[in-house]
Image 1 (cartoon, rainbow, N blue to C red):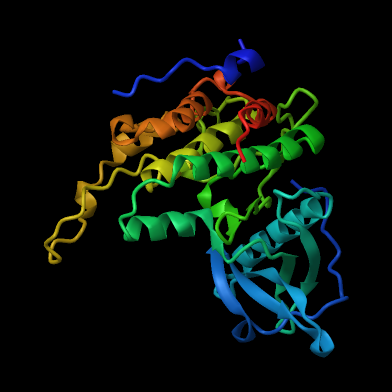
Image 2 (image 1 turned 90 degrees about the vertical axis):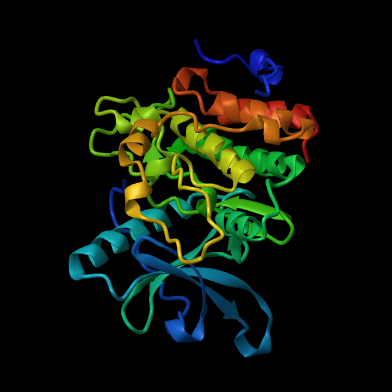
Length: 326
């Protein structure tokens, strides 16, 4: 039975032990050559640059520009350009404060296809997680995690309920942050999937791509049914990332003070990793104080292996807003 809104608002206390065609490129703006832009992100086959815009001395807001890497071979280039086309077609029809906005699709002087988007911030949530980990600062404060959760859930609610779209690749690197969490936006809808009125993916030609460590159980099964709850599982693991500063299921051996010791591939238990995919990653709740109780509850319910036990994005928004999460 699907989680009811009332039961989700007051959960039990956790014990602390594809596209139909190309998007026509717009010729209305020019993209500088890559060396004249600041690179601040990357993905599989693409790089993201900061494009400053000050025509005739005017100061305009910068854009983020996604370009296919020149190093790609022809077949890979065609694949990634198709994904840029798909992403542009989807982004053109989205408008929400928690979703990165569309600005245009065009070709640079070198002929590479470029997707220009709203500049949502120079760092992804994953960048901030890595920085916090390197500085040994420990988990993000609980109120920060809940703020991220609410803003992400608002964006997902818009995609699921208003646009009938499954994001399909929710993770910390696809959440862009500006300043001290002043703005929180979901990005990279290039592998999103259509949902029907029942929040089920029924397009026989479409398939869930995602990213392995964040894939829900149903996306790993040959006959698994993909629904809006597939995004919710990955959403739950994103909250887990903020508590653990780790990659889900990738349990590497602890760092050693001896710099001569390096990680040996033989130390990685590949069988255990693949067996753990799609399950709830372990969380040492004893290391978290009482302020994290709500975050832990949210993580637990969203990371259930059974999609029907996960709340919808709309239920998460309603519950957190009722608790006056800011």
